[in-house]
Length: 366
Image (cartoon, rainbow, N blue to C red; front, top):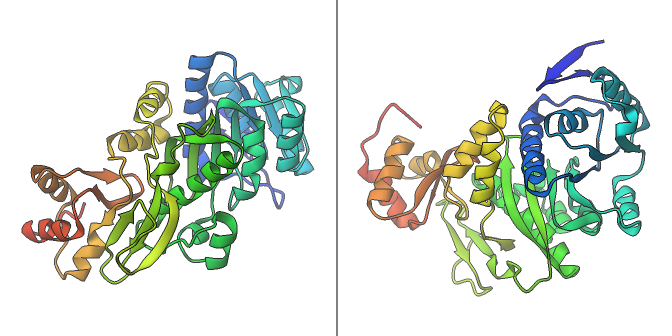
């Protein structure tokens, strides 16, 4: 049987159909470790629910590398549970150290809530959209607890599946170069609206896109008096010019593709991201992304400068020169981890084009 090493842990690589190891998930697993280290540092002995534990990669790394001992690992596939148990043995973790259950994720969360067993952190590593699990997760989460969820619903969140977009999120999504950030905002909006229905609200902690999936952490807060529903608005996108405009009210004075109402506030808690960096010195994969996130401006959306240069028929200037020029002119500007060709700025579309045209082209594209 093939053995995989990840972090300080070792695993049997599953060979059966329906059981798999996703090497692309290492960044999200490391971010989960950093989050759990930070929560433990601030709260002490925390409780963790893994709704979809799979064959145990996250469970075991969270136990051994984040030091969490109160773990409820749920998995709907009984064959995966057998693999999970084998991996516990491989890492010398007594089986009775982890509470293992075999249920549908929604049933697991709802039974926990009904029995009063709420969690400090819920890891919701769903395939596709997490929307069907939101209500259950809110009920099973402690106030001030974190839900750390996955979405691999890329075709829908990036505007390629209209009916699914309405069904899962209640909005039309937009196919654009900034769809990965807008998609994150769409799914965050759905969590916020569901919490609001239950007289609670979520505050974003960190939003990460790893090129394959979104991994987002939100903190649950009591009441709606200090909620961020005033940060909801609309995005209007011109698919020909690639210009986007943001509207905080439902009066829109231009034409284009519309997405909304969608959350347009901060998607990172920068002070918390600093704490994640402090505890992730040994987590080299996620540390690189955290360093990018800490330096990116937390304003809605971004321009793909290469795309716009194609439209205005110029060679793309180096990204650093564009950002420096925008800053010299008094605008906010930065890169974004969402795309290697992204520029976040509060400059208008017209000003952004003027800056692009003012810089001499270079062979250095980034």
